[in-house]
Every structure is written in structure tokens, then in C-alpha cells.
Image (cartoon, rainbow, N blue to C red; front, side):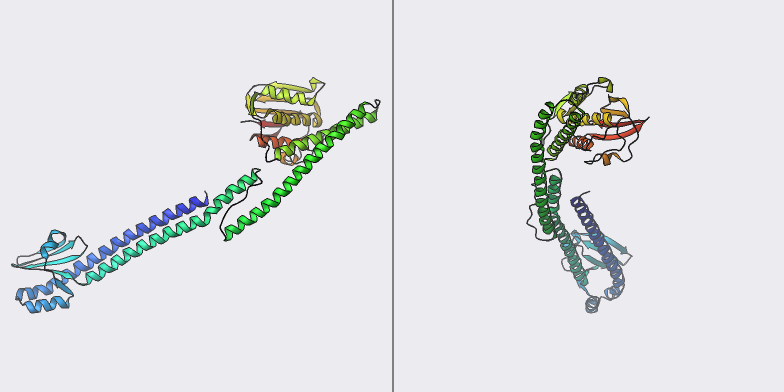
Length: 405
């Protein structure tokens, strides 16, 4: 889960919790005030009925003032817009406690034909406190929203940083982070830009060096091959031919690896079947004795890839099988969206990833002529196609499998 989704979820939870707490607090406050006022009105009504029954208006008014109550003149207005929350009556008297639409509570008293409407003066204070609480809740909500916006603004550059790092990791070495932030995130962005610039310089220099070496070597190698053909046949001629072929192969593989690593490298994707791929791979090897390789096509499925690069990958697997296998023939098996190259021999002593590093090779080959670039190039081509390269050892056979999609 991204940091932005976490912030949004936390904000939603905080906001919902605050609204819930505010509503519950409001309900609790109203219930508390209502309970306290009802109890007070019931209690004071007993005292007031004494003066009511004596018809002593002055003492009644004095007692009303002492109890922090006041008489309501516009009683009809309150009756029309009020609900009864408590009611009690006997033969001579009755009381009602009314709740007005503005949440104020009124005491209605009746003795014989006389009636009076009273309201607690302290309700105004309680009402003001409740309004203050409501405004505080609203302010807190705005504070949470403001914090949410500030957090998003602070962390938003991380999204651009993540995208830029992914681009850089995918080979776009010119990618840089653009941010106006001057805090810690800005420092991270500037540090990355500086690092990316240095890495880009190193990569470009390495690419240029390898390209120059590869192209410069091709000419003398070609001239040397022509010159060797003019020499009389001998064991030394064979040794020179073999050495030049090894250098030529190594140079070609280095150039292929560099092309795959290059930022501008793009695959020429096409659709072809398995049989075509295997034929193309075998044609690159120039195998004179066809009995060395046995092809088994159980499923001639279609493949969507760059046939040039993929045939090189398969060619390298076949070449390794011929070099390192202890018994011929080797087997090429196509089935269920996978192509396997099987050769008799000892199990690999180390994991496949070790042999996919450049300039590594096994110790059990019959012909130690490789430079350890074969599997490295295979792995890079497979990754470039989003395919999978795997290894198994079964019934004395080393099995390298290319799984397509």
C-alpha cells in the first residue's frame, strides 16, 4: 500500500472518529442537561406550589428569582413549538416540562385555574457552552483537514521521486527529479540527481568504451582470419583459428550485451513458431554433424518476440550443452510454451544465477573454450522479453528451460 493511500485511510478514520465523538458528546451533553433540568424543575415545583396555593404573588416572584428562574410572557409561542418531555398532575395541580425547538426547557405549572411558564436562567449559560463545544469540534475538523492537506503537499514529491527512480532503473538514465521542495525531500531529490548524473556518466563511458573496443577488434580479427587462410595447414594454424574464433565470439557477445543494456535498445517484436526459432538458432551454430542434436517438437506453439535476440539466446544454450555435455546427442524439446535444452552431465555445483554473471563458467566441461558470457547474454535476452529462464537436473541431464508467455 502506498504512503498516499495510508494517509488517506488515516484521514478518513480520524475524520469519522471525530464526527462520531462529536455526535456522541453532543447527545451526552443534551441528555445530561435534560436530566438535570427535569430533576431541578420537579424539585422546585414543590416549593413553588406552596406560594402558588397561598396566592402570595410577591413571595412567589421572590422565590422564582432565588431559584434562578424567570417568568415567560409569550407562553403561546413556546407551547406551539415545544414537545412535552415530562408531565405530572393531580386533582388540584399539574406540571409539564416542555422542550422548545431551540433545545431550551420550560416549566409549566398549573394550580386550579392559575398557570405560569418558567425557564431556568442558567440554561443560557449551558446553551452557550454547548455552542462553544460545537464550534470547537468544527475548528478541530478544519485542523484535521488542514493537516491532511499539508501532509499530502509534503509527501506528494515522493510520488515523482518514485516514478523517476523507476524510469532510471528501467534504463532512462537521463531521468531527473524536478521538485521545488527545499526540506528533507528536496535534499533527497538533489542527492539522487547528483548520483544519477554520475552513474549516467559512468554508463555512457562504459558503453562508448565497449562499442569502440568491439568495433576496433572486428577489423584486425577479420584481417587475421584472411591472413591465416594463406598459411599452410598445421596444428599451429588450427590453434590460431580457434583463438581468433574465440575472440570474435567474445567480442560479438560483448556487443550484444551492450546493445541490450543500452537505453535506446528496442526489440523488433514479431510472431513466429517454435520450429522457426530452433532452425534459426541451429543455423547460427553451423553444426556439421547433425547427429549431435536431436530436436523433439511436441508443441509447435507461437512466440511473440525478437527472433534475432531469442535465437541467439537459444543458440548459446545449445552451444553450452555441446561444450559441457559429457555424452551426445543433446536434446531440444518444445512443449507447453517452453523450450528445453537437455545435455548429459554432472549437476551444476552452484545456483543458475551464479553462471548468469559475466565471465563465469563450470569446471566440468570437455572443452574449456568459453569465456563465461553465454548464459549472461541468455539471461539478459530472456529478461528483456519478460520471459523466464530456469534450470533443472533430472535423470542425469542438465535441463535449461526458456518459458515464454
